[in-house]
Length: 477
Image: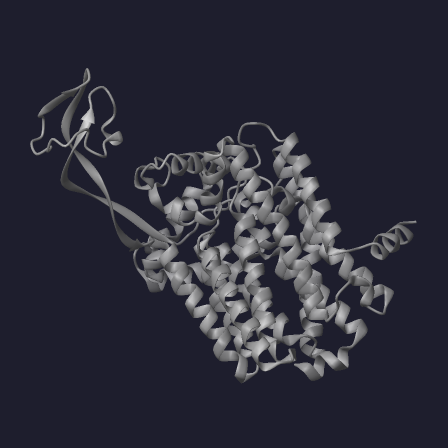
């Protein structure tokens, strides 16, 4: 019965229908969510407050929660949400809608990547029924994995980060395959358009989560260039480099500087409304008063909107300094967490970087296994959210196992190496760095959704290609 239902769904499958179904499911979930920040992710309340703060044109440097750093590392989510707030939506609904749009876009991009790698226009183009089933299950698993579905519905930046990463992957692959297009002039125009869109996607990924963007560029981008033909390497490297530079500039900290400019400020109103002088009278002495039509004005200095650009601490901090502060970050993540990870034994080596490095590497197996394979049922259970995460994590354990098997098959049979090696590099590097940083299983489980697309992508393209045309895939690579 299940196989029959699956085959009927495959026969009527299209990316457009999947996108619509996913979008409607997210809208229904949005309707069912409480009007206050969800207990599953209280952080969305902070993002909502920041969106409202930006919509009111207030100085992000004065934002009470995390100052300007949160704004600079979530601009891709906050700026569209702030625009919706200006149109009259409440701030929590605004960040949730933006997250839903990015989540829906991610599904479209992921399905397009699968189709592009497999060389098909629709699922039915795969000749073997088992290959169709694998591709269908892979795409739908990415679309409706419970935790990933929730994180891309709540007002969080995970969906924005994921969408921009997938857009970058799709455009890099399109640029790599540009030799298949006929017509030199048309090819140049299309390549230029892809290059510009790729730069934009990479730049916006820095505005969603700079740490993930850096890992993406360094790992996946580097290996993808390495696995490509020389004539494509330059344009791909130039795309990554330009996108990274613009992305770093996009992730900046604006600082306001006070000036000696004086403005007539209406008495009884906040000085922040000061602007254009109330009359032609020159305001040149602090404290002087002017009365026009029963309205009294006071000559006051006004903070200028002149801004000085400084790169965020995420980029400017040296790796050694970040290494020395790992336990401080982990301790902050452990505060109030029901599933806090064990404290480190490296605190005795504070500010001695080489010893810290050795100690953290010694603890890496425990931390990495915790990130990848926990929470576990009956061991890490507790709250309702922890129980749900523990149940779903059984799927994750199976998926990670199939991912490892698929990558080995890809290496042995040389199946789609140009995408499996870069994607696996991204998964390994991201998981390793997350293991060093995370302090509790709840946040770690949420951040683990960042590598979901990589796991499913490798499994789908390897198992599907292995069943259809392994020889062709091997020759291509």
